Structure formats: C-alpha cells, structure tokens
Image (cartoon, rainbow, N blue to C red; front, side):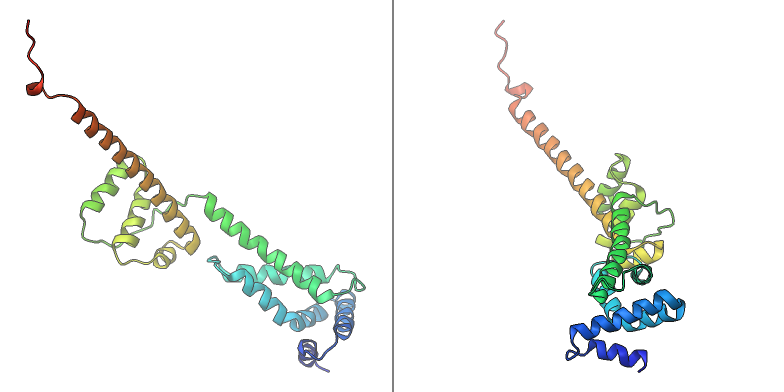
Length: 221
C-alpha cells in the first residue's frame, strides 16, 4: 500500500479509530527509527490535517503565510521525533503540536506589529488635492501628535484612493502593521482634535460670560 493510499484510508469515515491509531503508531516508530524518509512519509500522510491547522491560523493573519506553514511543519516533525508511540491518539497529538507552533508565529507577528511604531522614510504617498484636512494634519505634525509618515498615511488612504495593502507592499510591511499604525495615528489625532475643540469651546464660553468694554457700567466716581 502506498502512502497516498494509506492517507486516503485514514481519511475514510469507515476506518475505525483503532485502525487509525495503529497506522500512526507504525509511522511514528518508523520515523523515529529510520529518519528522514519516514518523517517525510508521515508528513505526506498528515498533510490534510496540517493544511487544516495552518488554514485556521491564517484567518485575519496578514503576515507572510509561509512563516505559519513552516512553523506548523516544524512543530509536527519535531514532535514526531519525540512522541511516545504508545501515547494513543497520535494524529491528534501531532496536529495539536503543529498548530501550537504555528500559533506562536501568529502571536509574535501580531504582538510585534502592535508594540512597534514602524519608521517609513521610504513612503511616498500619492498626491491628492489638498484642502482643510491637509492643514489639520500639518498642524498635528507641528504639534508632535503625528509623524510626517503617519499624516501621509492617513491622507493617502483616507482622502486619496490609495489602499492599505498598496502601502504595505510599497513599504515591505505586513498589512496588519500598516493597519495598526494608521489606527494608532487616527486615535491620537481624534484625541487631539477633541481636546482642541474642548479648549476652544471653553474659550468661547468664557468670552461670552465676560462683559465687553462698551457694555460695562460706567464708574460713577
């Protein structure tokens, strides 16, 4: 029986769990005893499960898919070499280790993108017609609320027709990092605008409550 036939047998619903466990036990023993050829064979047999594990981790992931694929495979093969052949439910255990390994890459990428503020000196945004929004962004840059790159990112992706994935491609960054950078920049901008509006409102209120010179009562003395 070829490995492909063996894999199809394991995937068949009619195959009993005991039979699946027995096949995987022999694969693990062979991989641990005879090395690379059998490790590769076990990977081939487990490929449908490995693809499912990687596919689940790809949801909403905007890093390099190859990173997750590589770690899923590495997690599977590393555990294959050390797992106890008599542990039972070997396929489930191996796939779990594969998914854990891939999840670490996913978590690391998202954490890195969240914590770091990328420097995008090479970012050359498309030029759009400038108006009031451009003046507001320029003022935010002067006040140190935004960097020039962050202002350009907002301007190009919100007011022009540039898409975030185009910016990410231009910068060689992941979509998620660019998305998070814009999200942080816009949050800072909104807070700054709200604070400025509150100050101006307070100033207007204070001025309205202060009598003007012509309306002040004359000093009788």
